[in-house]
Image (cartoon, one colour):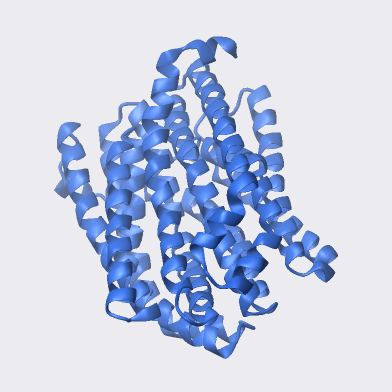
Length: 448
């Protein structure tokens, strides 16, 4: 272990992938914080509640298809490790084809889906109105948002984190600028926040496709025309992995959606306070995901090269730095959380509610780092089945904890969320430990 930590080249490899992703990922929750700050300074809390509920639903819709990025990263990284250029080219074309197919279906079905979802919400009528406005506009960004998943996954799998970094940074900066312009400048309120996100997604897609073309030429990959003509070859591997990660994502989004909607039953101030705290939770998630993304790319590369020693050294180094980042985040939320909340919303009732639940948030980084890291390990090894099963167990635990503590109101929701993160890490660690001891982890789990 100490030998790995003394190897400067290992630290460089981890940070060459993780740091760009951490920096770019932080802009994603930063966008959520800007949304909350811009909308939170309007005169009614239901505007913020509407963006929180509508944003949750659009994120659920898109994130359920987040397997497009994860599966693309894992398979591309393994192809990169084994130096298979045809496989690298094929996975990009297959991923984009799937992304646009799903986007077409989402747009075609968004009205009945929206009506069904909001029919079951217990939020106030004002929150529902603005949530539906937000959802109905954001859905038109699906072709770009889903394509960006594939673009990011493919570039990261090819061991290039700088281009995805610039893709995310530029997309989110465009979003933030348009957010302020449309909401505060033009007075479009919730509709302005949604329109800003749609335009930013398409800007990112155009930039991302240009990045891919540069990488394609630099690595002398087979012609795009050739790969399009054979797009169905090997699609089974991608679909099988996507199926497992989709079911895993379904469970994940069920917990976040339940937290938002159940919080809405506790009043507009609670749902607004949870929106602020969930923005901080997303900040933790995206910061930790930077190292998880690095783990995906490095593990996939080691699996593709069938190099156990290299894999072990990557695991040790990435875990070390993830722990350091987690400690820092915990200290920040513990010492300055209340002051950060006051920057997001100037509504006294929302600030008071958010301050009550800050201790739960402060505990999240150290508890959750393990599930993020292990997710990265299993994505890189394309072991979607284990991720699916682990998430199912953790989701059952989430609802059990909430049910047992329901009388404690919003505290029950936050306790359930913390337990959910812990169960994800524990179950994946058990599976990983077993497979590592049996020397079966290194082989790719999903074959063509």
